Image (tube, rainbow, N blue to C red; front, top):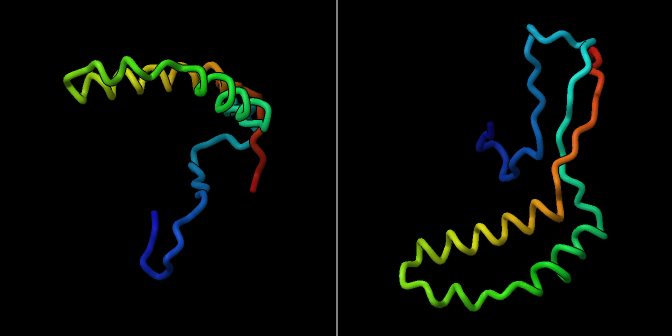
Length: 91
């Protein structure tokens, strides 16, 4: 949600569901975007992709799909989803 009172959009919002059991343990998923992983993604992976085949497509939608498939594959390889257990606490 945002409001026109300010020109700043919220960074995050925490909405609590009243039916949640706040003493339960749950899982949190995240991607590790460490300096090392970002460097691997940009300097090693993206820099070495052959993008020439994109110019061979006549249909821009097909070219974009090919680009997105390649980019998403590299992104998921360099920044895999990790899960950690977190214990909910009463706020």
